[in-house]
Amino acid sequence: MQLDGIHHITCITADARGNVDFYARVLGLRLVKKTVNFDAPDVYHLYYGDERGAPGSILTFFEFPLAARGRAGVGMIHRLRWRVGSDDALGFWAERLAREGVQFDESTGDQRALAFRDHEGLGLELAVVETDDEPLSAAADGIPAEHALGGFDGVRAYSASPSEEERLLTEQLGFAMTAPASYLLKGGQRHATYTHDEPPAAVGIQGAGTVHHIAWCDRDTDHEAWDERLAQIGMHPTPIIDRQYFLSIYFREPRGVLFEFATPSPGFAIDEEPEHLGEQLRLPPRYEHLRDQLEQRLTPLENPRAKTVRP
Ligand code: ZN
Image (cartoon, rainbow, N blue to C red; front, side):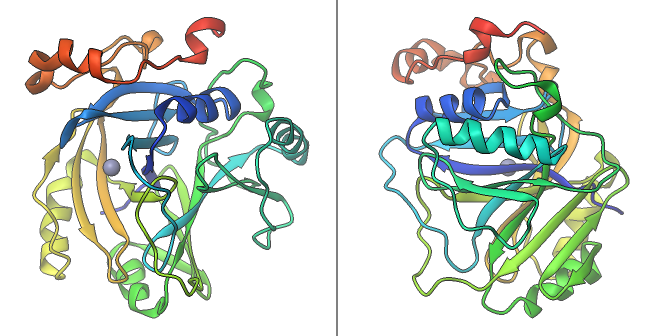
């Protein structure tokens, strides 16, 4: 069984409108699904990605409108890293993000990278990465195709004792250790990096601008076997859960980061046409009877793409 890089990363926002503006307009990701939190349907679950919403490109946000600003601490992912194609692309993004008043961070040590934060403080990074992986990009107004984000490269997490995770990652999940506290997941089609950093002294708080979990992409045919294996090695996985666009298993790795394994199928075109992804509120069948009520209650969102981009 082999994991195939990142499937999606899920974070928390208190501001769905600002979130769509930042990720769809400023960063140029495609809003590929506008749905609700399946465990609490009165708030949004927004999905961004490349043109198709391919695994490896998907960033999702739960909206909790009253959530206080969180902060990343031990056992939490604190930075998401996307690939871009060239140093010219980094130059383009430095200029575009500065024009948007985005807050930049000190470099994470990588010369060919740009570290910054979204409007709620979530740590982000764009990096030029040597890879054979196919770029996973979306078309967006004002962003030349050659500079578009090309899918996730990986994440950085805070861990006080990374050796505890080392065995799980390398012996059970198929990651290779490339440097102390740095791992590479070399999938059949996609690669992903997972890096541990020394945690800050302050304890982490889950809230707006923090990462909720990371999902690794498994294969449709392996999903059940993973659930069994994770149970055998004491990870206490959930049963397989139907998330409408993929099947999921969740468990906490030893330092507390919530991991999910998600299948590539059926994907985001299961309930709307590929050319109209993300345009209408989509609800799973069990919440369809709440549609009128939810449409009244949810903050109306303006998708920048609906107005301008028609690739
Ligand atoms: Zn998930």
